[in-house]
Image (cartoon, rainbow, N blue to C red):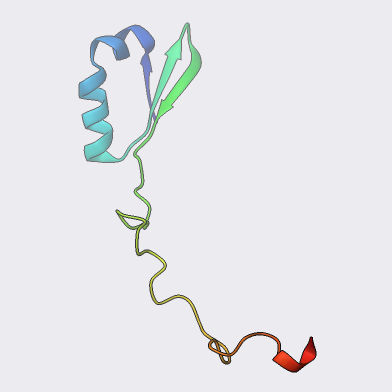
Length: 75
């Protein structure tokens, strides 16, 4: 893992981010030799772009859904 001082990171932030995106290698940002942050490649999730309709075709109907839950003579 590459280490970079925070002052150099501030000066070359966009270039460092682009390098991480291209290579996938993490960069450790240090301040006075102590780790402050780690820049890593973001892994996109497999979530759909739109949540509307994301549960389509996942439900299941069991039994009769038309008949009322109790009979009229139970009252």
